[in-house]
Image (tube, helix red, strand yellow):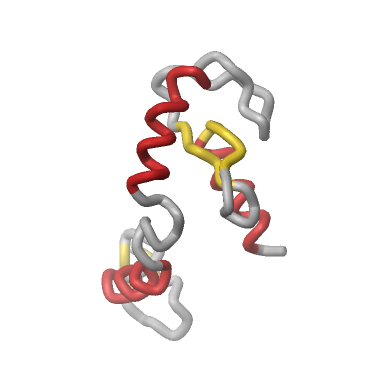
Length: 100
């Protein structure tokens, strides 16, 4: 058990944040559709995924394989897409951009 990561919260949890602060953070992020991952995004990802298998991820250059967690990468301004990439590479890129 560890103390909730939310500043000043003394609650002990087995995750990063206590249930109260996890819900609060999730609500502040917005729904998946509000964040750009609605039905159009999911449909396009499904359509593009088969052609991406075996091709290199544009972040790390390693091939994308069946069974790996893959994502449809947005452009930085979220107006379009850059293609299918490894989910971990996509998350790392998003994390880098959110801290700049």
